[in-house]
Length: 107
Length: 120
View 1 (cartoon, chains in turn yellow, green):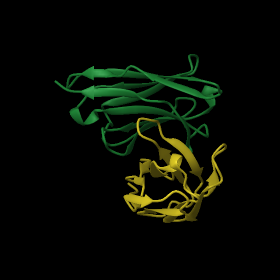
View 2 (cartoon, chains in turn blue, orange; view 1 turned 120 degrees about the horizontal axis):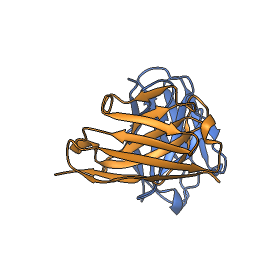
View 3 (cartoon, helix red, strand yellow; view 1 turned 45 degrees about the horizontal axis):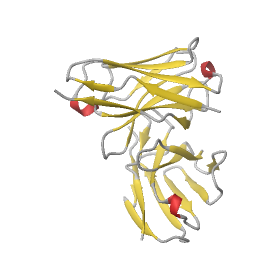
View 4 (cartoon, one colour; view 1 turned 30 degrees about the horizontal axis):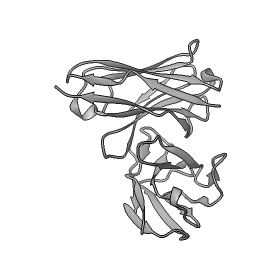
């Protein structure tokens, strides 16, 4: 199985900040990497697919990069509605696996 | 508008069975793969199972293989998850998710989830 490791596990930031969340795969997954946002009590929401493609309707403040084993989600100009938990997911091979999540909190 | 509505969750005793349903609308259900993903209380996301658009191929996490069965009725636009031999560790919110391709890809839409509690 491919293990996905996110860092950090939690992050405190201020409104207006730019932050990065990284995701590392235990083996190469090309660009078969997605990012999701989840708010408390809500279903996950797709943000990024194919490592760097923005899901339709998602704000351009979200961006993704990387290929192979190392990936990054960047969120610019944080707003109160961006404070949530973020997950990466590899869909290169079965079983599909998620990172453990990064909780983004307001400082 | 894509809509996915899960149902069928509830309280079940260890060793019991439950069948979850996911009613889909707003897209051509039969041409997209579908998945189940679960989230235990206070924990992260765990992929459970996937079925391709035709229903011909299915995939499972090792944690549920042999106990859970995914199926779909394309005439009813509905996805199912039959869960047998349930364990306490199966307690979670179960989400259905639509994939972007007939055979897989990433999850572009998610339902709101149905809660399953396995307890005596």
